[in-house]
Image 1 (spheres, rainbow, N blue to C red):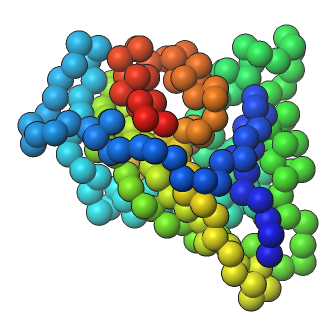
Image 2 (cartoon, rainbow, N blue to C red):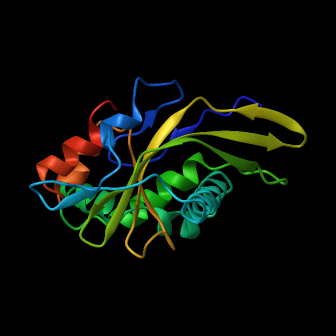
Length: 199
């Protein structure tokens, strides 16, 4: 199977299959205590096992839905800042959520058998807390299976944000050139820099 792995954000579609130079230390602290910054965000401990499981499950549903045409489900995992950014760059009156769904639909597989998707979390940054938000930069790859044929994607990254202490997650593509603009709509520059340094 030769299915290119795309993160389908209609602002700017990018294929990001290769590894990128990145260190967890870019969004973590080098000591055990919580680090309070001027902008009011906190760098905290490593992700716990329950949060990691919740994140992995959410990513599995997101990517499984994305590849198999479940656009209504997939769109629920997209962070609202992505759509806010789209509204800023699309013509006034554009239904950006519908545009996004159409992009997903165009990229999803249309086949009798579903594409099976398994998420491998390779590295997860220490938690960045800002207000009620828990934010991680996640390195991962996907194992794909279709009618017994196996393949894997290269390493990719996304930014995962939870506002209910890891019960649910929303995602922003970390390798998309628009990532700083997306984050800067709501987060202070110090937080944006901490999240995007090394991407």
